[in-house]
Length: 218
Image 1 (cartoon, helix red, strand yellow):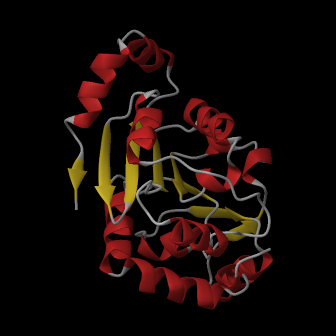
Image 2 (cartoon, helix red, strand yellow):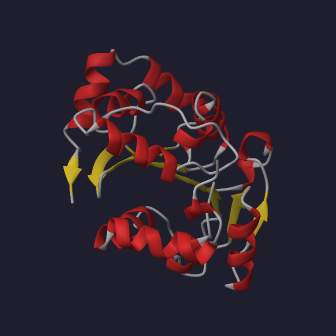
Image 3 (tube, one colour):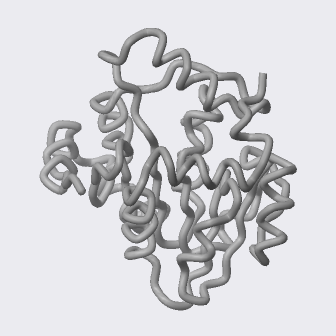
């Protein structure tokens, strides 16, 4: 059953600010720090398209399946389309792709989506995902899952922090940061043959060391 948070764009935005507080703006600021003037930005599972309001004039396209969120975004003047991210085919038109809190919604097809995006986007891929807390009381975990039910995708178990870091590391991130109960990974020029060869040639342990040393908490 769809969570009340996903029935209204206005309610969703209010809930995000209540849940994350100042950490939400820190996440947006961190993500935007990797986006250069002139970059074309694609935002997958964009919710109400809030990222566009944090950009400095970049061309922006947000993809979202929730009709209420799309309508809210359009009222705000944001360039958001109703589109299933798994069926999108123009990733190579964009310099930067942001996936913020979307992978756990498309689980178990998150691997398929990540690999397709990394292989196609021109310059930078930024992934931000919350992590499950195994020591959280069972009732609280169930409540969190109910509140995160978007009514479109099945609600499933998700990764804890260490599992999420290992998942990110498989693809050779430039850096991983922890901000407001989310892990944010940045990948640069992954799709070029040269960089893919460099990444695949590194032993897993070396990749882990490289990304863990960039792990910062804000």
